Amino acid sequence: MGTIAMVGGGRYEDGEIFPVIKHIVSLAGKAEPNVLFVPTAGFDYIIGDECIFDLFRQCGAKVGNLFLTDTRLTKADIERKIMSADIIYVGGGNLKFLMDTWKRTGADKVFRKAYEKGVILSGYSSGAMCWCDEGWDDCGENHSFMFIDCTGILPYCCAPHYDSDSWHAFKDAIKTRTKQGLAIDNGAAVVFRDDEIYTLCGDDGGKVYYLDNNGVEAEIK
Image 1 (cartoon, helix red, strand yellow):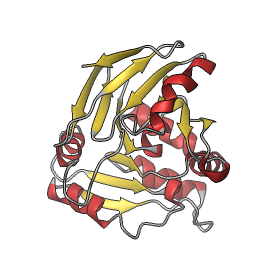
Image 2: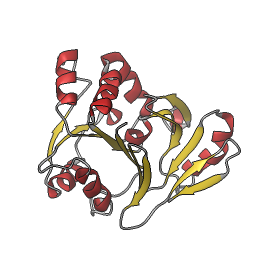
Image 3: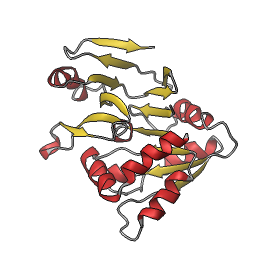
């Protein structure tokens, strides 16, 4: 079908997550792939994200940005930028704002079109959850957790940062959902490529789990 690489979180500034980024770049199968960084969840604020760009460039990729809050962009502009990328990498932040913006601009539909064309979809935290049916994010009032409807390309209810105490509460939250849970530790990633599913991790390790509707975990190897 296509390729989606979902990263639970990790440290970019000291290169802890570098092995995961290197693998994502390799999936493009070409020299100097074009990476399109989409910082919607961070309200298109990219100060501090330079270390992310540096890691991709160390792997031989060229990096550009798509600011979907820019009202000067037409739908044709958005589609052209997305469809000309080899790799989409979506940043973390507020998942509700991300999905509201994508739906308003029509970007959600273009990302699905790109996936079907063979563009690699990837990202961390909210940028991982967005490819699933639902994401569980702390974007509610006073950072309360809530479920957000996402693009639905993958049939899971997803949570990142699963090894941290507050996010591990997903184990109980999933009991209220009908979809199978997918939980990703910091430093870990899961790749869905055609009919294959496998996991990766950065220098500090990390795991990925399926969770059933009783909160029972099964590690994905």
